[in-house]
Length: 335
Image (tube, rainbow, N blue to C red; front, side, top):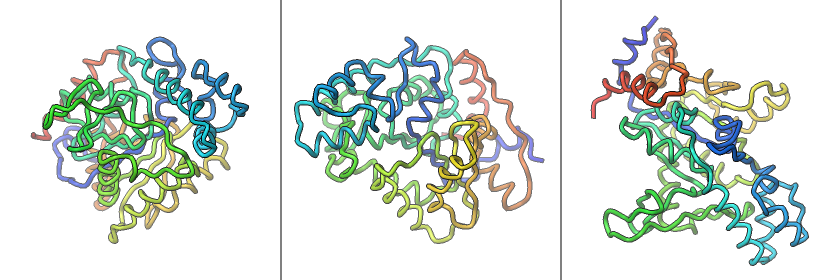
């Protein structure tokens, strides 16, 4: 048995742990809403959650109970531009209004459980991952990539840099431009979305090609994201020596067995000689059990048969306390 202290000193693994977040991750992190109690929507209930959105759609004769991305795609394809712009404005305003609670959240733990060699990719528009990153950046954190844009993030397409929308590019002093949030689902042409978004997907391909551990959190790989899945899967398959890689899915607890199997089946294309493991919560995952050392603990167990002691991560509201706890592991990582 490798103790927590021994594992903390092991920083031998350079291959990354890659995490892919969907709306379900934000829902799990904020089940009772944001700091003001505003609901964190999913695509299936977004039109009912965002104030005024259902009325805009109803006035256009559109069934707002359908999946939101399909509804938006229909507007664009039908050339209903005024309605599409009204929809975009309401979505942007609502997600921009969401506020991070002052207490520690699952997103703080999620970021602090990875280190700078790792990467986190998100399809979410909400500001929580960005805001958690800003308040925890005193520690080395994973690289962040916003694959569908984000309400807090702006970019410089010329230099492929990102930051707060209110900031300017450090290389050319040009104000950052807002990122597009909405894409027609049947034609998500990421390559047409500017140099910055191209860079995001180039980085995604690089990380997925080299990943040792791949965690999917709250992302169901819907048919509307077929292009995204094609790009990520092709990168994953480019590596020819996949023998010990680990894939884990974090999704809703207490799923019916057939629903759980359906979710696992969506990720079978990422499975080579290993298995998909499904967890009902973040606390069950490698990220929580072996924070900042997921790859080292996995390799020790899978190639040497040496299990690692499970970490006792504090589950407290005080953000400073959990930052100090993760900092005691991070001190062995160097610059």
